Amino acid sequence: MTIISAPPSAARVVALGLLIGLAAQPAMAHEAWLLTPAEIAALAVEPMPALFKSRFLLGLAALVGLTATIVAILVEDRLRPIEDRIAPRLSGAAQTVAPFVLRLGLAAMLALAGTGGLPRHGTATWAEPTLLVPDMQLSLLPGWAWLAPLQIALALLLGLGVMTRATAAAIIALSAIGLAIFGAPFLAYAPHLIAPAIVLILTGPGVASVDGRFAVGDLPPIPGHLRQPAYRTAQILFGAGFVYLAVAYKLTQPTLLIAILEHGDFPSLGVPYASVALVMTGVEIICGALLVLGRLVRPVSLTIIGAISFLAITLGETPLFHANLYGTMLIFALAGTILPAARSPAVPGWRTV
Amino acid sequence: MRRAITSILIPAIAMTGLLGSLVAAAPAYNAAEAAPRSVFLQLPDTLPEPRVDMQARRLPSGGWRITLDASDFRFTEICVTDAEAMPVGHAHIVAGGVKLAAAYQPVVDIAPLPVGTHRVSVVLRGQDHRALLGRDGLITAEVEITVPAGGDAF
Image (tube, rainbow over all chains, first blue to last red; front, side, top):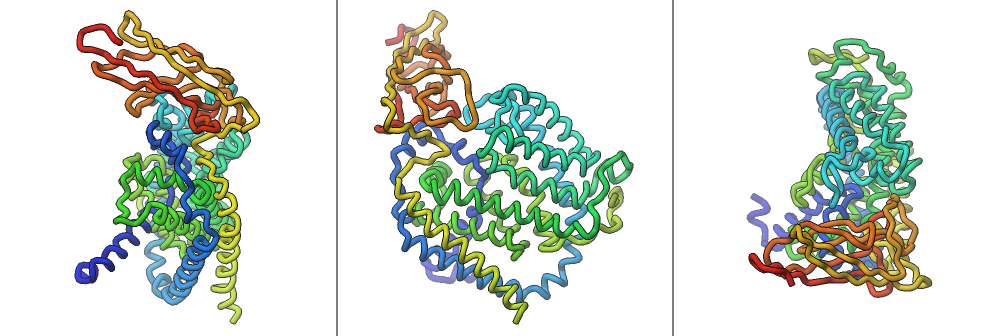
């Protein structure tokens, strides 16, 4: 009601803020896959927006972002008692339902990568198996085709919840292999694959898993004193991944982001796309940095979930591109800064092993 | 006091350092006006500028044989994940905003086109599929194909 009764300009600002906030988190490094050949031809001659070349304007934007961040941190301290009261109810689900979501998301990524079921633009479906993400084609690297069936097998294990921790460890190994064989291009993906795997090792399979009913030789749980450092490591990796993507793909390639916004006919409410792109970049950097610092973990996670969902709708892309993010963000949103100790199951069919 | 330092001051300093360094570095980088590097592969000025021309000939099957005449460019079937800025790679054949084929050699056949006039273009690509950029932008050529209803093509 407040928005409706406010002057049109205020409503417009609020609406735009909401839209940008929702869209501020990135697709991953796959923006270019969305553009048509004609849009790519236009992008080749697109000039760099003055906003991204001006130290004064960027400094002003950074100052606004910094102020907002400090205010948010102050608010977090004030609201901590409320968060502490509701946390036990939320954090329980962080080890039951959320790991199940994460497991299925990672399984979908592995299965689609192993079969070539989610190809990059211009590649036939089911034709090119990849390593974990659509543009890391295994056919480019002779001798590594065996990773395709391995990924399918790991997907099956994750889907069923068999040897979940060992399978998650295998995803970390696959990410390391990706960095070794694909080099720097894989940096855009590795943090957002390793961090979910770490989280899954910590939480275990969650509900609806074979591991929850039968002991089938999975890795032992992480010792209690190492759980929190490992959880923080996952947060740091996740946040650093967002900062890297924001800098590498938005701050230093803004015309690409603007082309994507135009392609998706992003509703900017009359605000120039360059300004929208700058705000998106800033929000992404700040959200990533806050995760690295372990601050405002729940609000940041909810923002990211909303953003990647909104982007998938706006840009017409499949949510499976972000299948590795949803479950992880859900666990971060439920558990917050501190992952609770493993506990006995409250849900039938689940137990901590 | 100590709590205030760890709770507010340290995050504030960290954020200031991060944002400050980005504000210092980004304008200098962006001043080069480079096209997005994740989409384009800029060829160095020291190399001869590649050129491409194209011709289309109708096949008895109704498809089209595209012949590319590229200079200072070498076709290869080898693709890599992160290519050197060299005039080596393949070409994408595009019509109506849709990629019809990738040409890893100078001659490639494409499927029959529907009745009407089509502007078919070719764009040279690097070994990692990024579009090659020369001094004048994309290295491209275009041909117009008319497919009459029930008749010969022109």
